[in-house]
Length: 196
Length: 101
Image 1 (cartoon, rainbow over the protein chains, first blue to last red):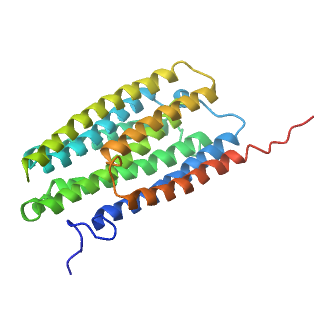
Image 2: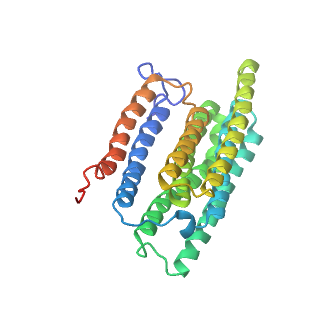
Image 3: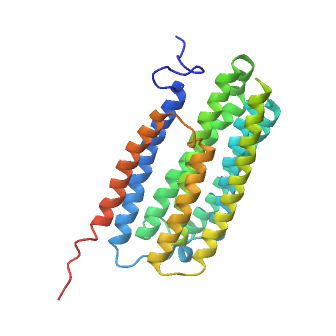
């Protein structure tokens, strides 16, 4: 059966089904992270002492990762804009850059985690590190999910460009919405965990 | 695809690059402020304000929320209400502190 309203908009919603679907999914994602932000606030206001993030964590590494993730959001939106301008080669370049930047983020995160774990500072070490590992771990899983989807769209999934270019462009837009959301979460996680 | 449409996108691209610049500057500002070692309350307010501006730029321009269909705004407004609840509940636990006289 054909999936309806992949390109043309549904008259009652004014949206393609995929776009509405991803926004509803992102709403549920907001609530997922909100539950953890809420837990963080509760743990923090309820504790007698709370360390400064910059004393416990590596700020330069996280600063570098923030730059990397914001850059990947720009390359993602440029990948979509390239398809809109009918420039497929540029699309491949920009989406490829997005994937590479996402991998760089994970590698840096790996070194951060390794540093803590080698020093015996796992999640059970302190409440601060417990919430740090939980939140950045969940965020990291989202990065991994984005890499998998984007790599599919960059590689085998791009065949759709030849047969249904508009539908493929919509797919990139939707994957982009998810990716920008992951960037947005990090924009809040970075100061909250590392700088305050 | 009409050339007029492609021109529109080119204008968007300029906006994206400007937003990129703004996000970079604000990231540096966030880190710079943290080196001032302000009072915790001040630091939290400033850091959250800067993060909110950055988040809004991403949502408005990269996620195209500056021109989107009403249905998406409605669903996000509902999400925002529940989000606010989750943020207020833990803060409210701090309102009934028992003060020893």
